[in-house]
Length: 118
Image (tube, rainbow, N blue to C red; front, side, top):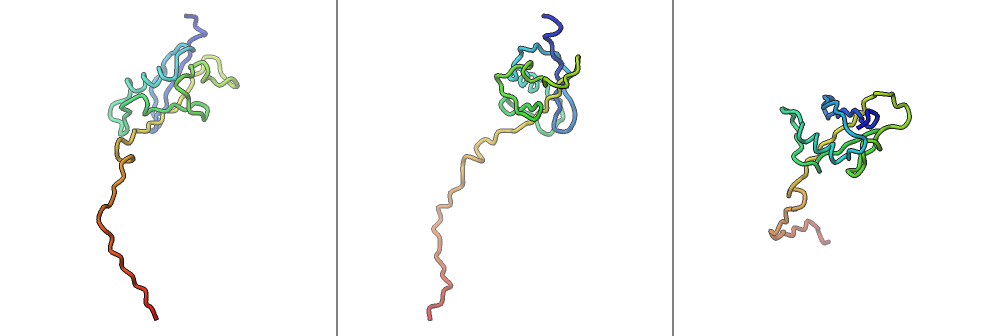
């Protein structure tokens, strides 16, 4: 694989710490990056992704789609030769059943009227 096809990527976490830099082929997909992030997540963090679908990657202010490649994530202007792409990592833990199930109050309501008829 030619040297030009490799891209250096660093992942910036929510607390300002970094994972990487790693070298990826320009044809590697965003989904592959997410799998690497989940497997290499630092120990001792308060928020830990349990699955790839809980991770969102942001580059140049845009959320990256899983089907995009690393080569498509590079900024075409201002790119410094040998520069590292910094991709921000956002973890959104899935809310299991708490959001989908609503508590239904089956108790009968008492009708209390405070009106005065004159």
